[in-house]
Length: 337
Image 1 (cartoon, rainbow, N blue to C red):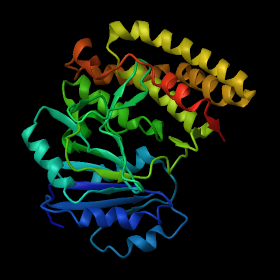
Image 2 (cartoon, helix red, strand yellow):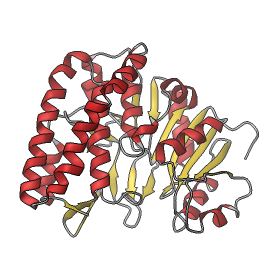
Image 3 (cartoon, rainbow, N blue to C red):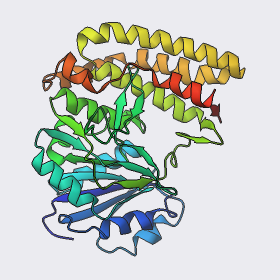
Image 4 (cartoon, rainbow, N blue to C red):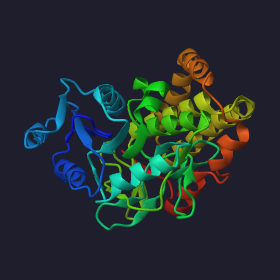
């Protein structure tokens, strides 16, 4: 640790006693890494997380009295961070030994890059998950597995490197997002400002996917999720579409996206014979978007004064193949609980 860190490692934790030690230890074991500080926001955990954190006297702990969610937790940590760069790291993720050296070296040599991450691998088997993601026309993440492709549309907040000044200029994560797609928003906003989002073809991190909100991974050949996760995901992704899509394209994409959501909701509701699915996910998404339209318009107006990229550069990291159709073909109708 140092009084003048180059990078602040920010770890949002909630009931992470099973994984927190390995996460922090992976940061402390970095080889040839920059000077760092470690900040952990404990989101009113009910397990032994705070007792575990007491074993690390050099780690700054922000102990919240109430559960505030992923977005607020990270905003609080970056607010007190002192590093030139910030690395957001999930409590269920662990860095490879050369991760910080790789990220800093790439950031110093690619000054046009606004946000970085590393190749993501599964925790248990070490299988490649993605090298960042592209986006489909409906803002669904599409895993990139091509080693030669460095530029992507977004990277996961589980391991997200950003210059602290850029974070502050954007305003961090919108608190109303709570969790899910906040990383997408940050990346899309950086790309609207003419900066790239990149994943170097080196090092990596391992990650327990879907631990906090459930879902996001197949079990026995079928996708599993929760109503809460789907509701947050659909609303937040649509909000990012409204906030960041260049205006000429937004006029077409938003109505098409809205109609697609309604059609998808009706089909899945009929297949599952589950009216709660339509009410809690699809109807709730559209009603919230209508109710919050003024807030979203105000945020878009505030950000667009910083935008530098147009249609071509912004959509260069998009793909035309709808991700949900691919998942439906591969795994069938998702199981919700």
